[in-house]
Amino acid sequence: MAKPVNAADLKAIFGLEPKAAIEYLKAKGYTISWNWQRVLDEAHASSFTVAKAMNLDLLSDIRDALEKALQDGQTLKQFVAELQPVLEKQGWWGKQVIVDSQGNAELAQLGSPRRLKTIYQTNLQSAYMAGRQAAMEASTDTHPYWRYVAVMDAKTRPSHAALNGKVYRHDDPIWQAILPPNGFNCRCRVAPLSESALKRRGLQVESSKGKVSVETVEIGTEKRTGEIFTAQVTRVRTTDANGKPAVFSVDPGFNFAPGKGLAEALKRKERAQ
Image (tube, rainbow, N blue to C red; front, side):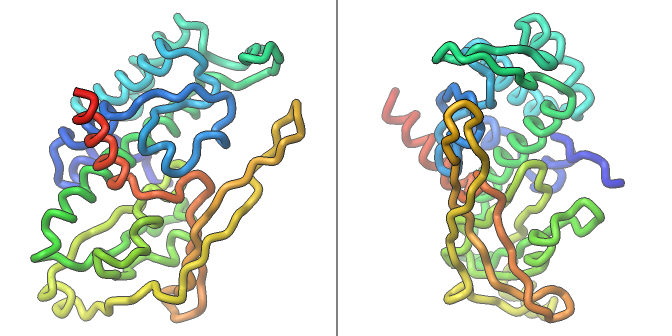
């Protein structure tokens, strides 16, 4: 079984100081949401949100803990150990009957070790990938090719494994949708390549032209009203390691590039100053 990715692992993988990653978190505003399905895609680039975390103090505590994890290189175990008592003190732990802003009551799963793992891994990888994308875009004159890298173990989604090793130019529009993370607990990353490295490894540059589609899928139903939630997902027709047809697909809610969010969030921060 693969071990969880922690902050120190991400820093080693991406070769970055956490400054840009922390900026990505700090530049975001807050969005209070009962259902994760209401805050999707680009909305994550501008807002920090945790489903059913229904007050700003709570969201602030969680984001502060993530910033500390990035800065200090905390493991998941350390992150949970420090944040769990804070959430318990705020009453946001375990299964509880919660009343939403319309006065409707529902039994909801609040904080748990499993939820904190998802919060930790997804937010840290989004932050590091945003910083990584900014660094890669600054060096496209020497490293114009980007290679998708999946972990390729038993936990890797077959859909994500389908893109492992695929190389596209940095300006191929495909990167606006497939830069990791491409789902909760996704561990994929992107590696830049120079022309000489591309030739030395015998890699082929692909084009996404004619191979990309965007589909609308159902992602759940509001229990009280029956409202059906939908999301757009990008799908890429490709081939697997054996040359057989395969399809990559982002998970619902991840149809955006974190690095684009960092650039836009920093611009908003500058305008606000």
